[in-house]
Structure formats: C-alpha cells, structure tokens
Length: 272
Image (cartoon, rainbow, N blue to C red; front, side, top):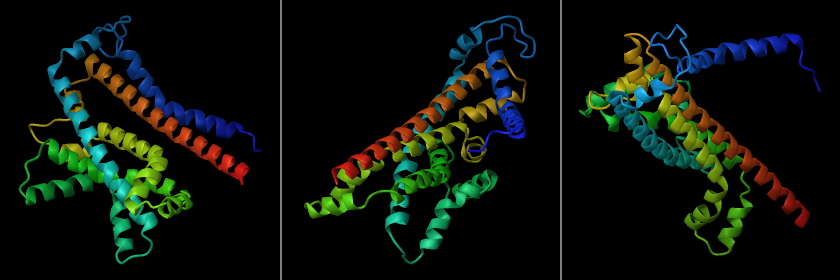
C-alpha cells in the first residue's frame, strides 16, 4: 500500500483549503452582529431572524423548492426509463443517437443549454415561468439520474427477474415487484442529486425564468450586485446546509445499498 507523500498531502490540503475556506468564512460572518460583512462586531443570529421576514427571499425560496421537487421527480422518472432502455434494450436503430442525446447535457456548457431552451420556448410561444424552469432543469438533470441508475442496472442480477417471470409475473410486474425495489437506492440517489442540482442552478434558470418566477440563486445574484448583506450570508449558509444534507443523504443511501447487496450475495453464496 502506497504511503501518502508530503507532496500529495500538501496538494490535498491546499485543494481543500481553496474549496472550503471561503464557505467557512461566509458561514462565520453570517453570525456577525455588524451590518458590515467585513467587520466582525460579535456573535449574533439576528440576520437569520431578518431573513425570515424578508418576503422577497421567501417567495424566491418557495419557487426554488417547487421547481426542484417537480423537476427532480420528472427527471428521475425519465432518467430511470432512459437508463433501462440503454442497459436492457440491447442494440437497436438509433441507439447511438439516443445515448448521445441523453448524455449531451453532461458536457454541454450551461450557457449553450440555457440559450437553446430560451430560443425554443420563444419559438413555440411558451411564456417563461415556473413551468419552463421545470422543463429546463429536467433536461439537464435527467442525464445525471440516468448515469446513476445505469450503473446499478449493469450490476443487477437478471436471474431474479427471470425467476419472477418463471413464476408467472408479467414483464411489468417483474419490474415493479423485483427490479424497482432493488434499484430503488440508486433511484433515490438520482432524485437527491437532481434536487441538489436544481437548487444550485443559476445560469439555466436565468435564461428560462420570467418576471413571475424568480429562483433563489437568481435573487441572490441580483442582490449581490448592490452589495453583500448579512442576510445574503445567512441565506447562503442555509443553502449550503440543505445541499450538504442532500449530498450526505445520497451517499449514505448508496453506501447502505452497496453493503446490503454484498450481504445478500454472501448469503446466497453460503446457501449454495
């Protein structure tokens, strides 16, 4: 086993410091008594109280949550279906084009995606609002769900489905009663990942949102142009907490599923 060299240790430390020290500073100054975000005047939670009474931020937060829930749910359904087709569909006409269209948002710049969707919505005469943001977020988060679910389907033991079919289940029943419960941790992880991506998105939402629907990242970006206030620090801290909880939950679900699968495989090996 290779030991951690001093160069790797220093590089790792500097990398984590570059990523997380700004977040730590933001969290600390969200508890600052002073209205000046660069001057520490003592510990206080009053800005969190002020945030609760800020209707503009609360309305944007409600829009963001609704968009995230709807888009992640729709992306999970479509992404799971796409993953099942890619893994179980074998070779069919247009498979290369289909897989390319599914995975294109992974490498496509968000500006290009947002601009393309904006032109599409204008071309079909669709008013921009919550519905268009949901469609846009579903478009780019569906591919992430597809990747997560595909990785689980590839390692799935198809003999379980065949046994269900031999016992009289239809293909739809076998999927609902056998396949779906087994891949459920991957589906849940995909939903949580899509939910987190929707919460954090700024670029695509700025192209597809309208005056009647402003998401929280857009509201924060607009407010920062006039200067950073302690309320923005408090709001950003809450967003960091929500995203962190989502990522940790997804990691725990995936890890628990892997442990359970390993235990089932060991039990099956002992039984045989």
